[in-house]
Amino acid sequence: MEIKTVSVGPITNFYAVVENGKTMLIDTGCYLNQPGWTLKTVMSGIDLSTVSLIVLTHGHMDHAGGIHHAKTITGAPVMAHPGCETFLNTGKFTWYIPRNELGQAFYDNIAAPAPVDVPEPVAIDIPVTEETDLHPYGFSGKVILTPGHTLDAISVVMDSGECFVGDTVLDPFGEGICTFAVLSLDNEALKESGQKLLDAGLKCAYSGHGGPFTRAQVEEAFFNLKDHNG
Image 1 (cartoon, rainbow, N blue to C red):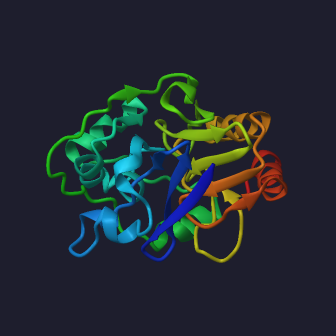
Image 2: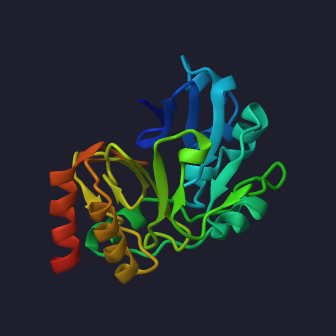
């Protein structure tokens, strides 16, 4: 298995997991809708004809904003929580809610979530409402529900311990820190999701912002989340 990080914008990542001649995209970034940004240019060196699955960790523009372009180019089925449908159909997504002081600082430095221009709606081909095995799709892992940051958040957990967590764990300012989502719609669900990721055998967390993070870093962040709301 090979993991390729695709960085778009200052601190935004999405990923390509290559296994047995197939490629799974995990998120699509948001800058792909901008002039000059295409899947081909940002994924140099990756054979797009091998993309057989696109997984969206949640329905925010920096993770799913490039889905129409990615779907058009690859033709791959889209796997996501049904809660992503609103974004995929209208470009609208849930307002951000700061979880703590760091979240408020982050919130104060981002623009209000204006709707994204959606060329045309994109259907969810494989809705995820429970733990979903990825082996039938050719990848050694599973998808689990990890709500908190959003209610539609999911994570990809590979059998070998690599976890693709969207914004559940991140470095919000690109300063080398590791924390659980600083913007959260459900703090208790976020704590449960953190425990679920650790119980699933997380060895390394690949985030939409910053990272990757070691298990020790995630454990420390989880301790701060659980005991101090940090």
